[in-house]
Length: 261
Image (cartoon, rainbow, N blue to C red; front, side, top):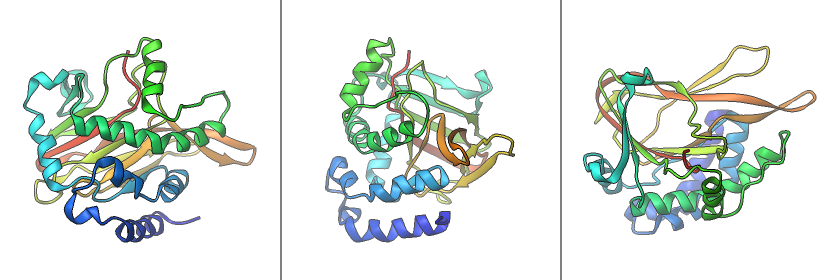
């Protein structure tokens, strides 16, 4: 079994060797995603519970998304986290139509994650299967009454944090989701590490803190992941959050593939 460091180091080498867009960011999001080592990402998710890819978005793209936060007409709702005891901070769910970059990212990323999601589902009881395209999956959500878009921007100030949680917005949920850090660690903020906690039967929880770079994408389970046990695979519930910021402002783009009820 590869260690987290070995998996991440192996992936960074492969990423740098195959991604000329890292210098110019002139290629489309769809093209950038095709260059990623998806077998390596799937192996990361299977082995340590998450996968990551550095430098997916350029600094100008990150800044452009941050600028959207103050354009209230783009969002269907704003959540002040303290009001609901979710933490300290604020996030906003985009309304339809989504910004073009978010739409392209959501649709293209889904296509690469669907095979991983189906492999996860095949290891667990039930007959879950996810179609190849996001449009087809979104129609399934809409037929079930889940019609509200779920991509969001999150904003934390110094002292802000996000309690451990799961992003479930109805009976249907796609097994994987993604976040992209838009701010610059150490320059724009300090603290604010991404947290991932996994529970296993008859054992203490496993907690991980993950430091992301600006424009880096992190892919992780929405609710649970399959773990190999002595009698086959079992469900390991997972929750995620953000540790307390020490200084500055931290913005993140969240990409969730199921719509909300």
